[in-house]
Image (tube, rainbow, N blue to C red; front, side, top):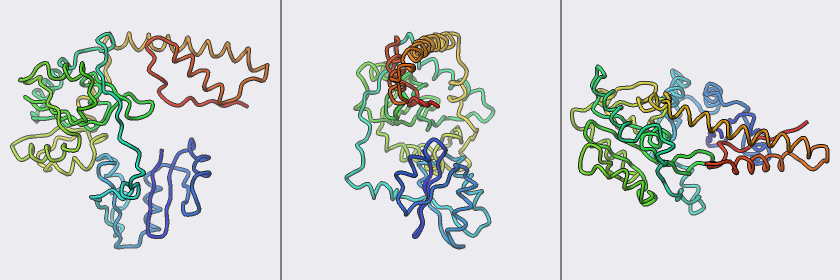
Length: 325
């Protein structure tokens, strides 16, 4: 929802217009509210707040390569140094009040809702690896939607997004999925490991071990293909520069963007079902508004209820935004 910067004597929050009112109510006098999200604005504030010779630290596992480079460019030549921080200070401040990690089930999508099996998707990515002029030996996935799409898995770790925390390292002959495997539904686990042993066997590893695994893998004569838009700078920095193949987006993200015939049909059907809910809502508004029985909150609740009643609904894709006047 925003970006916070904290110095020894100042603190500021950058966020967009959706959150200005909330921020004004919740921030105390220690904070400045900046009504923009531009990295250039953040950089200019840092240049004023941090003296020459100062260090600016970011958690490298919370920023993509592209975002890190944007901050680096904003500070370039200023006499300030951008450094990765090893221990997230916000995590330390949380203490025992930090919310518990996500614990919901990670499940397989029914075959009726997948355009291709995950084995077919893996084969397609490996074919792209073989055909690439650089012949990469592995593809690294940091984007949560990349792993979810590749394996036809879904979760609920982030509100309104059917994804789960995970990384994937797909090589020519192996597949490593870094995830809390205790959360995998039995059918999901069976699907992932049905091809074991073999090149279509998904090896389940702890989420926190991805850095160590990647560091070990890149000791050999390998080339890792990744997308700079989504890969965290923390993982990027583990890989020697000469062993990197960088594109803006990984081959998985690009493959995900091209919908096959079945996926197109599913998208159209989903929009039809949603249109039914919206039409029902508009008819309800015509009846209820003249009676003075609808406010913004109850209106948002009602359209959520109508959408939830539609077949195959798994909930809204974002919190309903309701307004009048």
